[in-house]
Amino acid sequence: METTDTGAVYVQTNTDPNEVIAFARDAEGTLSEIGAFATGGKGDGVAHLTSQGSIARSSDGRHLLVANAASDDVSVFRILDVGLELVGRTPTGSAPKSIAEHRGLVYVLNTGKPTVSGHRLSDMGLEPIAGSEQALSASNADPAQVAFTPDGRTLVVTERGTDSIVTFDVASNGMLGEMRVVASAGPTPYGFAISDDGVLVVTEAFRAEKGAAAASAYSIADGGATLVTASVGNGRSEICWAVIKDRFVYTTNFADGAVSRYAIGEGGALTLEDATAGMTQDGRPGLRDEDLTDDGRFLYAIDADQGEIAGWRLGAAGELTALGSWGGVPKTVAGLTAS
Image 1 (cartoon, rainbow, N blue to C red):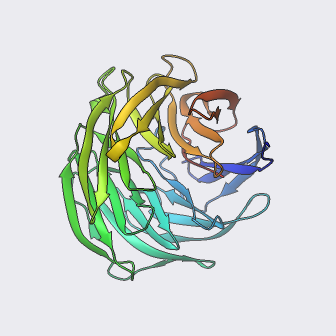
Image 2 (image 1 turned 45 degrees about the vertical axis):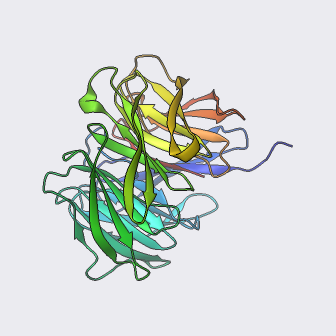
C-alpha cells in the first residue's frame, strides 16, 4: 500500500545575507516553496560552495543547522510544521562548510584554518565544548566533509589538499581521540556516505579530469579506515557527492548532469551498476549536493547552474525515475537536506 508520508527539503542560498529556502514535499514527491528564512549570518556569495553537508537536520528531526561560511558561525533553526524559527548563531571557526550531528553532539568542519570543533545542541542552540577543537592533518588540508559513523563512535573527514581520509575516535564526553590518517585510493577525495554497517564510500573527483571520476569503499572499524575497493570509475566527470540507501550508493557528477548508482556487496565490495541512473541533461553541468528522504522513496539534488532542485523516485531495484525540477533558488545555492 502506497505511503502518504510528506516531508520537506531545505537548501541554503550561501549569500550575504544568508537564507534557508524551505520546500514542502507531498506524498508523490512534488515540491512547493514555503519561504525563505534568514540565518542571521553570511554566506560567501560564491557559486559552488566546496563542501558536502553545509546544511543538516538533527537526528531527532527537531532542528536545522546551517554553516555560514563568511561569518564564521553556524545558525540553528527550530523546525516547525510549516517553516523554520531561528534559535540563534554560534561562532565555530574560520569558514565553516560542513556539519555533522549525532544525538545532540555536533562537530563543525572549519576550512579557513582546517579544524573540527565540537558543540552540544539543545533547544537553546549550540554550546561549544571546551577544548574540543582539533587541527586536521595539514595547513593545506582543504577539507570537504565531516560526518559521524551511524553509531557515533567515529568522526570522518575528507581532505582534498592532502588526498587523505582522517578519522577520530569519539569519546562519551564528546571529545576526540587520536587522529588517524590514511591515503585516499584516488585523488581529490570529496563527499562521502557511510552505510549502517560501517562501509565508507568516498567520491574521487580526480582533479576534475574528464571522464576519470570514481568512488572507493573503506571499512570503518576500531576508529580507522581500511581500503576495501579502490577507485571504481563511472566514466563521468567531477563526481563529488554521495548518499546511501540500503546497499545502493547514489553519486552526483557536477560536470555532466548524471546521478550514478553503485552497489555495496559482500564485505563492502563496491561495483558500478548504472553510470547514468538519473539525469538532468547529459553533459550539462550543475548537479551538486543531494539527499534521500527519510522513507527512502525520493532523491533530491541541487542543479545549481540552473537555479533548480531536481528530484527522482527510487524503485525497488534501485532505479531512478525523474520527478521533475523546481526553481526559485540562486546559483550560489549550497547544501541540501530532505525529510
